[in-house]
Length: 152
Image (cartoon, rainbow, N blue to C red; front, top):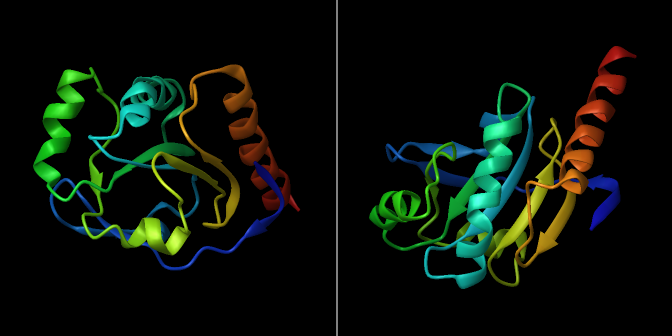
């Protein structure tokens, strides 16, 4: 679903691989695809390689896939990434599941497209093929919209 009007998001905090607290504000200025997932979730296992391919192709200073695990044990992420050949996604974790609750995510995976100002501009519930042309068009649209606005 793509929203006609961007939706403000509440403060969301989680941890990176080093245990440091991270918020969406840390990504401000970039378009992000926030994917809330878990290692025990079969549909998540199915879509993670496509998220990694998308991040490998498009990730950089303007865009990043933020894969946020809700596993209670953050030590499960590294072996999962190894088993599934995930090479470009960073480790982010919210073992409290507060982010899922705050976002009113009905389950995992839930994925949000977030603009440069940290506002939700789209949402998908359930697994998807994230490395296809339709997703890239959404990302291009978000990047272009921000560029047009910034040039005014």
